[in-house]
Image 1 (cartoon, rainbow, N blue to C red):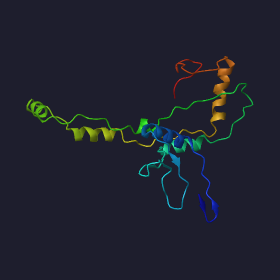
Image 2: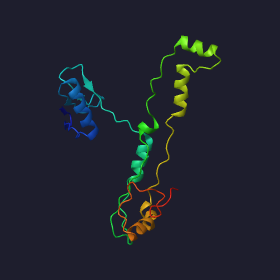
Image 3: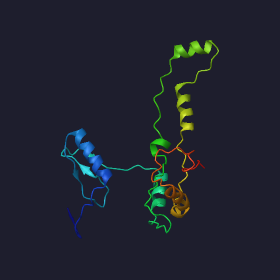
Image 4: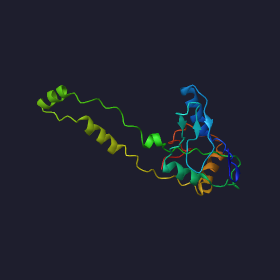
Length: 182
């Protein structure tokens, strides 16, 4: 494609775009072609059938972006540690903090009437869904503090090295070499 300034270059596909394209090509049984960017927003991919176009969007939580920004720190070099350590930080994902609403059974008026005659209070489907939404509201999670994590972990990692422990994966947190949860 060419505009007044010259040819418009296509940006390379990111991983999520490649994944979306390959999945849709398999489902639709067709090849999708990347559409060059325009001044007017349009689709990212177009099929040979002009009625099929795809706009790829990545949906991520603000907490993920905050964690990514916090993790963007330079490598820290220790003067005390002899090994190279990697620390995995377990954080909730969007599917953990905002799962889809489960399918609640439809209200059965005969069953409800039976149980209400017996003196019970029956929650209707709408009430159950509302109660579920209140308890699964997707509240923002606290971002892990990664700044100065190396210096903060150094004395603990030095103890592990002193005792020739090079991996704590799966270790019981009550183990004195691993420490107790704080």
